[in-house]
Length: 168
Image (tube, rainbow, N blue to C red; front, side):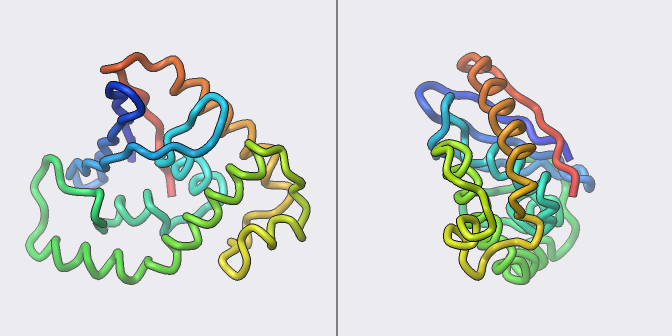
């Protein structure tokens, strides 16, 4: 699934994700993770979820047909009962969505704050919501990918786009 992030004036942005079934989902963004240069929260999700194989986080849930408050169908024809199915998918993925939120926050704090990334520090930041793939060895490549994405985003002018691939 390709996800195109659209830069708007100020710190506003939104994403359009074309699901495998042809439906395009609009995700309203706006929040950023503390990072230098600033990184949209939803780009951080895409990078971290993809790298840690979190298949039922934000992007995996949207790809599977789930929706949540900031996401809506933008274009394309949905199958019958898609709305009810989408709610069921989101509900079934609720724990995984929470784990993804915790993982993104922890990784961004570690990378941005240049905090230690040993097992103890990661566990302190994630608690019982730590995904098994979030290991000390996973942090350096995640840091590289997050920094790369942040610099790519910095180069996008107002009205421009950045397309990233989500692969569960």
